[in-house]
Image (cartoon, rainbow, N blue to C red; front, side, top):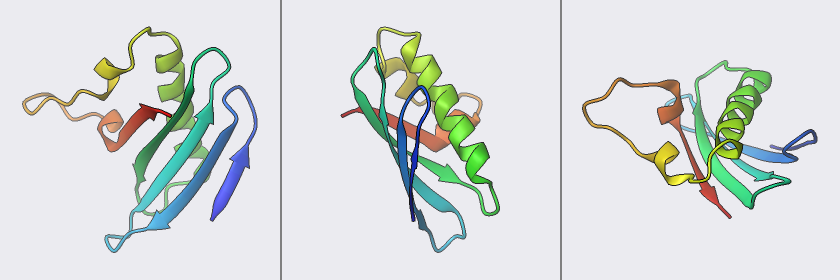
Length: 92
């Protein structure tokens, strides 16, 4: 399944259902002021497309407000788990 979503980031997303029942969502985003981005998010079973897109847009907003993407993708072994840990993003 593949969707093209317009708006500020021009998203293209596709998904693959995993054995666990969750969905791996791959997305490509063309950002007007920065490079093209792509990434993956793990969506829970029953999670709506709207909710997944909102999470992606929220992360893209954070990227747009920073000069350096790398610190957003860092993981902490001892830190508190956040919903952002279900998503990774890269410059295309």
